[in-house]
Image 1 (cartoon, helix red, strand yellow):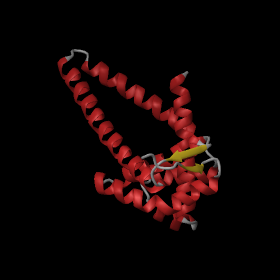
Image 2 (cartoon, helix red, strand yellow):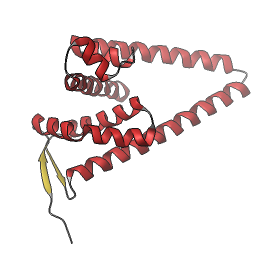
Image 3 (cartoon, one colour):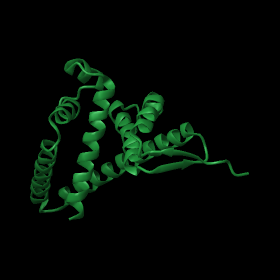
Length: 182
C-alpha cells in the first residue's frame, strides 16, 4: 500500500525555519547520542537544514517529515563515521609512505605547503562573509564557542547564531566547491 505524499515548500524560508525550530533539538540529540561529539552533531544537523535550503522547491515525503529528518540525521552520522575512517586510513597511509620513503621529509613539506595554501584560501573566503556572519563563524570555529556562548557574548538569540552559522557554512561550501571544480 502506497502512502500519500506530503509536500513541503522549501523555497519558503518560513517552512525551513519552522522545521528547524521543531526538529533541531531532536536531530541534535540523535546525532550526539551516536557520535558523542557536540561539534560534529551540530554540523550534521546544520548540513541537513542547509541541504533542505539548497534543495529549494518542493520536498515530497511518503513518511512523516519527522521520520524523513531522523533518517537524514542517521545518514549524516554514517557519513561522519565514514569520513573519520577515511581520514584515519589516509593519515596512516601517508605516515607509512613517509616512513618508508627516502623522500619523507619532502612529502611532509609538500603537505604542509598545501595545508597552508588551503588555509589561506579558506581565510579569503571567510573574509568575504558579511561582518556579523564572519564574527559568529570565527567565534564558533576558531574560538570554539558554543552557540549559547556566542549568543550571550553578542547579546543575540541562539537561533540568530545558528542562522548565521548555517549561512556561513553554506557560503563557504559553495565557494570551496567552486574552487575545486575550476
